[in-house]
Image (tube, rainbow, N blue to C red):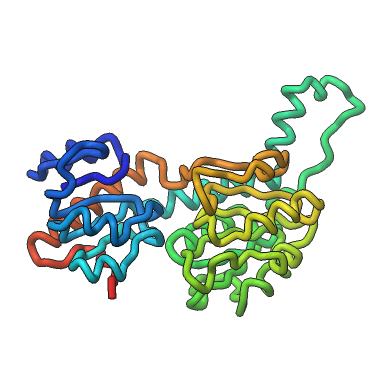
Length: 304
């Protein structure tokens, strides 16, 4: 069992307790592994599969598998598994945290206090847009999108969504495409997978549709956003705020994006809660057990 990336600190011991020999990241011997665990956002393709000729199962930590070459996996006879929904609640929590921070202008409020401006009665902060009654658009309505919608409704927001399947949730208004959703929304939250159809889906036209009072939150994948177009919009005052946990070439983040005071950035920590780790650990173990007992993991990803 090879761990191809740092995951939870508890996972190696849990695997050993289940009877697996564990090869941790950086240790020699990965070429002997029959199973491996990786992050779906880390590239795994022809070179990696060729370097592990005995590999039969690749488990993704979390639901995402966009950086896994599924065709290469099929060619090498490697089954791929993932953990759908395991970290969805934690990612949705972060999305709501971003929403509150942007709509209540918390970064600005923090700077106001730290700079001492609060002590000057003539320098009061303007009223923030707030969340109550605001229109939240969701691009993608899988496990994460559904949980964001539930939380947003509890905050008395209006919710609309655009996804491959019509959102089956009371009070969620369906939209036929992303552009019409962006025209309606005051805040657009990205919760869709990256595919050939969704790559750079948030482009100049979508940002323009959101408008200068609009805000964008990304807790899905960085490649959903044309970062150059985003930077131009922020620089030109054509977008009120941006918050993201993910970036197209992470951990590299454009310097221009880091310089905007109305951009709130975090280092891909959406699933980094202990509750999410426990759920993902259990799913990895369940995928392994099912695969070695039946030949099929509990949560397979179609590879061909």
